[in-house]
Image 1 (cartoon, one colour):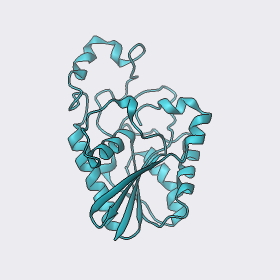
Image 2 (image 1 turned 90 degrees about the vertical axis):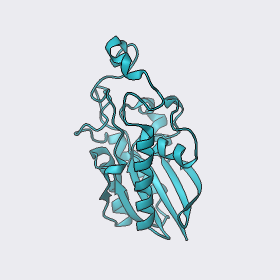
Image 3 (image 1 turned 120 degrees about the vertical axis):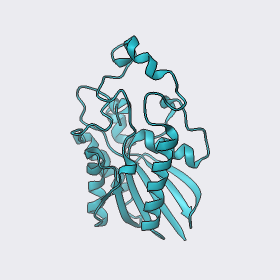
Length: 214
């Protein structure tokens, strides 16, 4: 039996102060972000989506809304889809203009493999794959959508592809409102596909490419 779990990154967030917002409450989608969410929902309009689950953070729940309206499914919440823990949360994050210019913060960067500044990659991978398995089981023979965040999604993908979890953040293939889709035959992953339904919106607003805390 074939089942597909689409893991969706949320759309652009209203973040005028350009901080790393992480798990902080109150960060909602911008108007552009809402357009991105609608574009992602339209990309799956002909698909057989029967289950929708979201990270509890506002931006993820808002991204799930057009899917709920399109497929007439009430989204559920799963804390395993949350953004990763990060010690730089709430700060501007940059070398010349943010937290990285302060030597007191350099100690937190001592170990990029765990990493030392936040939640261990192994823990992120385990909780994310657990959430995907639950969504797969709820949508057996159909399709599910899980709304999450960039680092957890990219860590999940590397875990499923049996690649090392530590990586260069600049090389993540996980754009705003992108779909990383995990295809199952029974309980076995048979392939992963990737799509960027909101690429045309990002192209019109280049600043969206460098969204922080996503």
